[in-house]
Length: 493
Image (cartoon, rainbow, N blue to C red; front, side, top):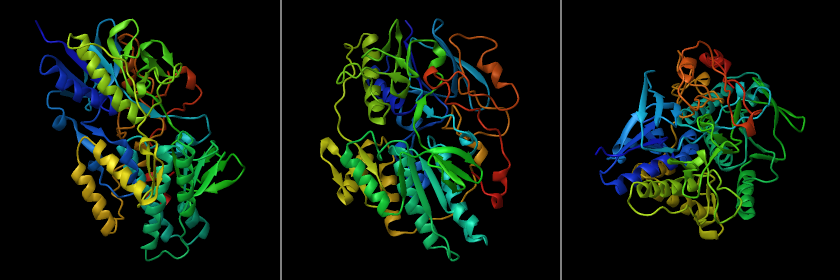
C-alpha cells in the first residue's frame, strides 16, 4: 500500500509549523510535500529591523530544506485547486506548470496587502509584507536622504526627508519607530546635513496607536514615538496620494516621496477561488481546522476563520501567534485522520504581546504583565530569539554589532519601485520584467483550460479581480512597470 501524501500550501507561520510538527508525528509513514514560492520561512516580526539596516536580510529567513528534513519542498505558486480530483496546479519560478496530487491538503497560503479605494494609493504606496518590500524601503529611505543632501531647493529637500506611514497596528508602529531612528542616524552622519530634518508621520483612523492591544501598551508606544518626534495623528488617514505627496483627510497636503502602507492584510485570494463558505475572505473551518464536508481539507493561519472557543461566536484574529499554534494543531489532527491519535480542537491561551520600538525601547505584556522601557526591550528580543526556528546566533550577533558599530548606509539598488507593487498576490516575490505575475484572484474551483494559466500568458498587467466579497471595493489593478525609479535623480514614490 502506498503511503498517504500530504500537501501543504504555504510556508508562513502556520504552514511551516504544520510541516515541522507533522514530519515528527508521521515518522516516515507519509509523504509530506510543501509548495511555496520561496525556499525559506520568513520571520515577519523582525522585518522592520531589516528595513532599518539593523539585521541583514538572510537573518530573518530560515531555510526550509535545511530545517524540514523529512519534507519535500516544491518551489512554486498554487494557481488552482481541484477539490474533487484532489490536485493542486502550480507554476514554478521558471514559468513551468506542474500538478500535485494529495490525500490530505493543508491551506496555509497566508495573506496579502489590504487595499482601500483611495485614489493614487495603488500607484504610489508600497506595502510591507515581504522581504523584497523591506529591501526596497531600506534602499529608498537611504536614497531619499542622499538626494535631499544634494538638493538646492529647501521645499524639495523637506519632501524627501518626510516619510508617511499609514496604519498604526503592529507593523506600522514598528516601521515608524525603527525608521525614525534610522533616518536620524543617516542625517546625523551626513556631511551635507545642513537644513535636513527627518520627519515621520504615523496615521490611522483609529483613536489610538495599537488599537488592538491593551491601552497601557498603546500609551507606551504613543509616548515613545512622540518623544522621538514622530508626528502621530489618530483619526486621520490619506484621502489621495500623488507622486509629490499625500492629501490627508483633515485637508492638509504633505509633500513627501515616501508612503508606506500598513493598514492591514486580507487572506490570499487563492482561498476564495475554492467556492467554499467564507467569513470575511477567510475559509470557514471547524475547531479541528477541517473544512466542513471536506474531511481531507485543512486550513489554518490567515487563510482560515477558526472559531475562538474562548470567545464563543468570534473567530481568532489574523496574528502570527495564532498561526503558529494552529499549525501544530493541524499537524496533530492530520496525523489523527490517518489513524495516529485522536483529533482535538484548537484552543489558545493569551501569553501576551511584544512591540519593538527600536533601540532599548519596547512595549510588552508577557502573561498580562505590562512592561515598558529597557526591560520590555529585553523581553521583546528574548521572545523573538526564542520564537525563531533558526538563525538565533546570527540575529543576536547583528544586534550586538548594531549596538557598537554604525550602520552601513548604502543602497544596493536590487529592488526597484515597480517590482514591489502594492496590489500583488505574491508579496514574497519581487516582480521581474517579462510575463505578468498571477492575478490577485487567481484560481478557480476546478481546473479549466481558460483558467489562471491561460491568464498568465496574456500580455500587460493583470487585474486583481476575484477579491473577497467583503472587500470587493478595496482593490485596484496592480501597477505596471514605471520608469521613474530607473533614474535616482527623479526619486520614487
